[in-house]
Image 1 (cartoon, rainbow, N blue to C red):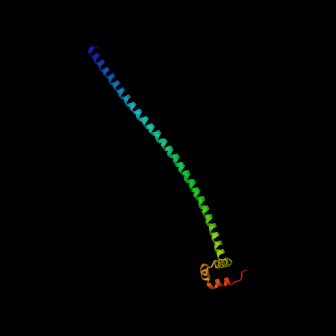
Image 2 (image 1 turned 90 degrees about the vertical axis):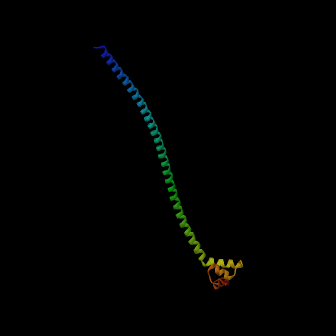
Image 3 (image 1 turned 30 degrees about the horizontal axis):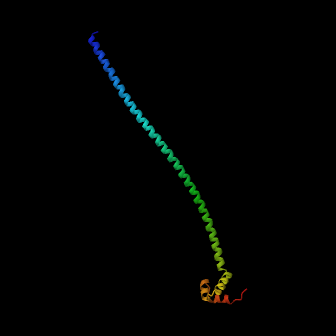
Length: 141
């Protein structure tokens, strides 16, 4: 073989080796950059998953609190209903008591003892003046 051809072959193979080394270095650089990007994405994903976990826990807390408040409101509504029924019953008893003849008689007699006129007592009790005077004229039982 001709020495010049072997020099050319040697030079060409050297250039190819240098080119391969440059390509390997560039590929290695790109690979490192890709690893950094992947690591960054993994960190972001882990952070995102932590935030999702916190949000899920907060949501469970909120739902639990909401359900507890709903139960409390239901219990309060039930108590309020029972109180309203009891108040209606007591009001009805009070109305029946104030409408009783015995209560009207006691009211008129005590008002008269305090110095109220029969007209004022009639207006306060809803009776006529004659009815009030009749009650005042009755002997004490």
